Amino acid sequence: MGLFSKILEKLGINKPAKAETVPQASPAPQAAPSAPPVAPAAPVAIAVVDVVAQLEKLAAANPEKLNWKVSIVDLLKLLGLESSFAARKELAAELGCPSEKMGDSAQMNMWLHKTVLQKIADNGGNIPKELLD
Image 1 (cartoon, rainbow, N blue to C red):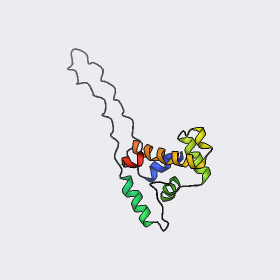
Image 2 (cartoon, rainbow, N blue to C red; image 1 turned 45 degrees about the horizontal axis):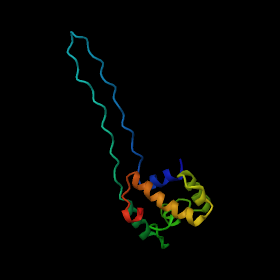
Image 3 (cartoon, rainbow, N blue to C red; image 1 turned 90 degrees about the vertical axis):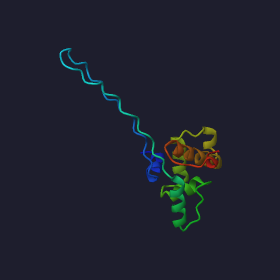
Image 4 (cartoon, one colour; image 1 turned 30 degrees about the vertical axis):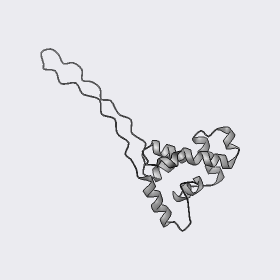
């Protein structure tokens, strides 16, 4: 399990299940009445998770003053995940950080913070637009 999967897990966000298709019923012989065809299962909607409320609650209960809205290190610490440079570099590689940003820890951290918030939003987390810009 990658670090980003652990972030989603800590926030209670599950990846959306793929919609399963039910095989169509085969046509019945002409003598017997045919059963109505079975429709494919409806896609499963992504449940929206109130990420902001969860993180604000964790921040309020944490003795450190952690600002998850601007710091990837603070976000990882709030979630109880490893926030070392090595862990952040691994997460950046997992999420496809451009190589020119990987060589500069400040640029990598800014890219990583924005990307993690965007991917949380893409998976059903309610991240405010101002944090995604």
